[in-house]
Image 1: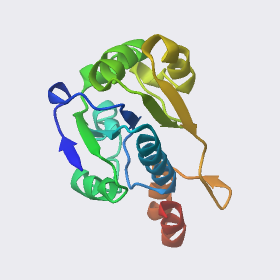
Image 2: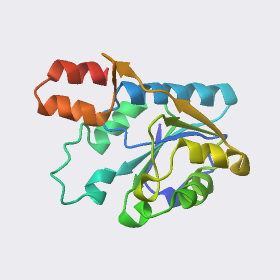
Image 3: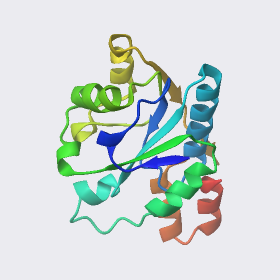
Image 4: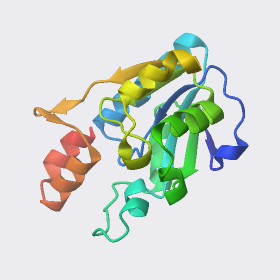
Length: 185
């Protein structure tokens, strides 16, 4: 797996099948997204590209909030994502300026401008752009204009609970280690 840390120095990915997220802990929901990205890239003869952020967006957006307990460091995240057979990982520096992009700018300048995606794979609850106003519906609305397709991954349920990094952190903080482990698998 190739790892890139500068989004301004990327190669032109071949038929890029991309996904974007914090991927903290690479839990069951993330695992489904990564598998889908890898499989779609193989089917289309493209490259799988995972885009993540450092530092974690919450650390930048809410610096006064009680420190966010991350499930994995950037180095651990790289190793976990590599295990899923992903071709490329792009670690984007997350800044306040980046966060202030409106959702349309984010799609046009960041996703399309830097990655030229063939396919974008998103989890059902992924939000992006200033104040998290962008969502899967906006991506679909712009798909024809920019020439990509959108694949939505439904929630992954464990014990009738949608898996999320936040729920895993909460389980750990409450001492519910078995529950956290089930959500991670």
